[in-house]
Length: 364
Ligand SMILES: Cc1cc2nc3c(=O)[nH]c(=O)nc-3n(C[C@H](O)[C@H](O)[C@H](O)COP(=O)(O)OP(=O)(O)OC[C@H]3O[C@@H](n4cnc5c(N)ncnc54)[C@H](O)[C@@H]3O)c2cc1C
Image (cartoon, rainbow, N blue to C red; front, side, top):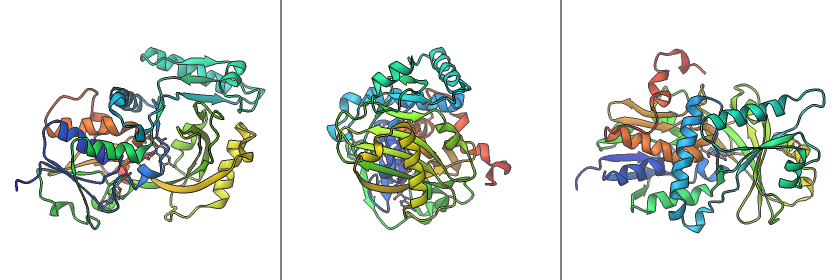
């Protein structure tokens, strides 16, 4: 048997996207996972496909990947539950300031300058779009191109459409024991155990899912302060984030915690997260919650993923923090571009892991 061209360690959405992109370039690909397809952060995530504006590099990667998801829609099976729900960034201003509506206008101009259609909602427009939001709120920004998927089924689809061989095996402990032209470390928050010295910190998050309430929520709602929570690197934080599922269920998030090693639910933090959600949607506490779970995002110091070569034949595809579902497809293309020496659709430099090899950024 010839050696595979590529072995991908990790059958989450990122590993699946890397394997898929390589297979579509004609490479022989195999995938190894210790726990099964889409069982890590991919099973724990929200599945919001969202274009972000927190840096030019984050915009480029999320926009490129969102376009790849849009190009895939016709091929996706129903199980992936792709829903073009759009996002509303919700502004809740202190009556003495209009800082969040200023931010809505800034975001609108930013996206418009880069070809992304958005619509500014005034308080009445926001209430009409989402009647279960507290009224009046200051307004919001509707981003109609954003969407929602069910991530574990998306990972399975990407692996199955080219019949990629997936082996469930004990955890890989040594990448140099794998015999292939290239090895891709796509082990998510576990990537640091395989490649020592990576600037990755697991960042725990909680989600709640409700019973079915069709029509109760229409768009993915995110509070405008969400990025403050995502980018803070100390302390626990919560931000309001609610998502309508294709089943009529509602996913409620989100929390962020460093240095929390166990999967157990932190009841104090969960209560804080739900109080934050109820501030925006006062009727939420009257809904019935079915399940709460936690998962670990792979966080990097500069909030950008690690995509590209690391050592000898090892490439990294990890560090996607809270955006790995969105950016998985673009990550797969960048990895396949590198392996096949093909120019990429976006500049790959901002995501290259070697930005951290000068030492200072390796400190947490
Ligand atoms: C609460 C929460 C909400 C989120 N919401 C969103 C969202 O709305 N939108 C979005 O874009 N992103 C979201 N994310 C982030 C997203 O879920 C992750 O970025 C993404 O799933 C990472 O995928 P991955 O394939 O890199 O990692 P994982 O899904 O964790 O996959 C890694 C795989 O590697 C395997 N593995 C690890 N170590 C080894 C080893 N030594 N040997 C063999 N196998 C190994 C694991 O078993 C696992 O299957 C969220 C995350 C959380 C926790």
